[in-house]
Length: 450
Image 1: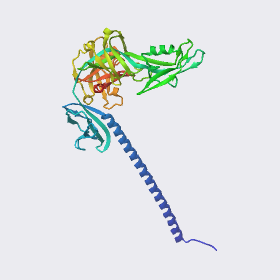
Image 2 (image 1 turned 60 degrees about the vertical axis):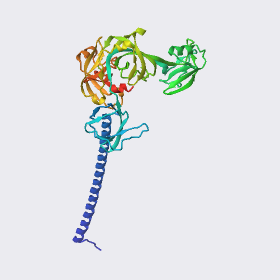
Image 3 (image 1 turned 45 degrees about the vertical axis):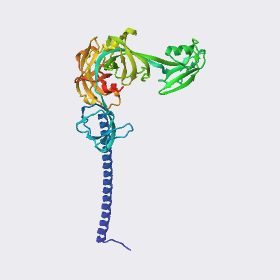
Image 4 (image 1 turned 90 degrees about the vertical axis):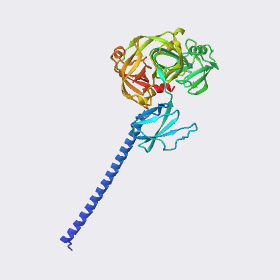
């Protein structure tokens, strides 16, 4: 039997197939649109998160964690950030006596604040006025004046006990390699006692171990804030002297620049701490002395090679300038004697707080050719909340005389006062290795925190 389809049926069937194809194409188009929308939403979310993260980073770098303001004065803040700040007065119990939301500042606009004598305020910063972002301390301080010095000084500091630089191995009397202190002592430890008796210096430690007839050495160690005892068995080396295989240091010397003298005869210098050259750890000093020194040679700084001022230090009583009482990341500090006070030949000047510093011309005070004088620099950037306290100010030497003498900033100039618009704003701390005309400085208020 022969089957056939009429033309009408063919048309209907073809129309049905076309409808199915159109439906499938429409579904594919809808699916693609959904994918496009999902991708667009993802891009917008990521862009929003990136913008928010950038805003957080930007604001964090533009607003300091602590703002110092002078007591009983009008202080201006021009942070220019998209945020609002709520002021709180914090009591000793940690509560605020200012009602919530009573004092709010628009930090996108210049703000003038009139301070009283309170010394503990907090500002809750909210990004875009909504997102809690950062707690900023506002410290109201008495205004003060400092004498800028800029004179080279010789520095001698002594540690409490002796500092462990590292452990090492040596050959015993039998020719074997031994390392008695390995895995017991660590770089940065301080040996304060040997067998219950205080260690005066590294020579004392070495001599007592050598003369100990090989008996176990009980060392009292300070590691961070913790004190504890360890036991090490000395071994004879090939010269038949007893050793424990440890490298130690008990003092440090160097040349720097005195930054300021205050009205009480206290000094600040360097703008950074004295670190051990091998471990890079801040040396925890027991006592220290400041000495008068003269610069005897200058090695100019070049790209890749920082320069250096070499001073002659005579460790005699008649050359002493004062006592060093503190070695911190912000500098070294102590008390001047009459000889040191005579170095402060400049007039005292008011300090400049970090929010008062501006990009542009400034000066540093230093002594490189036997004469203490001001040299021109330019402040190129200001980091109100740098994660490194010693790098709040970026600067560039523009004075042709100083560049001719030193190439810019050299080792030994750390602590040179930075002056801008008649105010004492900071001190030189570092030089850029690749460009000796550029460097960093610390805010004077950070030095005064010490």
